Length: 88
Image 1 (cartoon, rainbow, N blue to C red):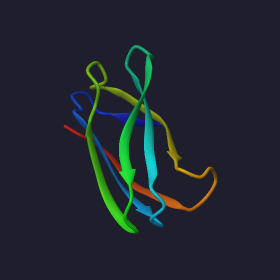
Image 2 (cartoon, one colour):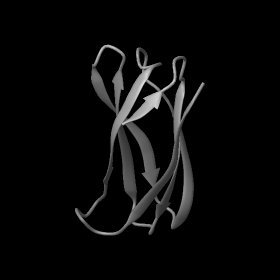
Image 3 (cartoon, rainbow, N blue to C red):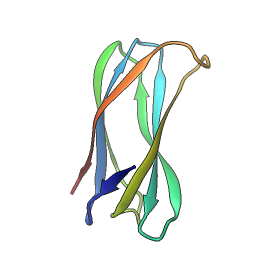
Image 4 (cartoon, rainbow, N blue to C red):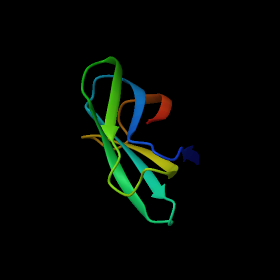
């Protein structure tokens, strides 16, 4: 798991896709231990895309506990995730 510094407002990362419309999801846990899934976005174009989304209210500190990629065809295609960061 990766820590979210206190006061975090956004999550950002780079995603490389083969162009098969993959959606990136990140699970976050707040300081109280409550978890939620944040959808970072769908990567449609082949190549690198920068995804930046606001954190839900109540998740301004805690941890990123998991990342998941889903797509139109299960287990088809490839995605690389890099540079996950919390932004204040």
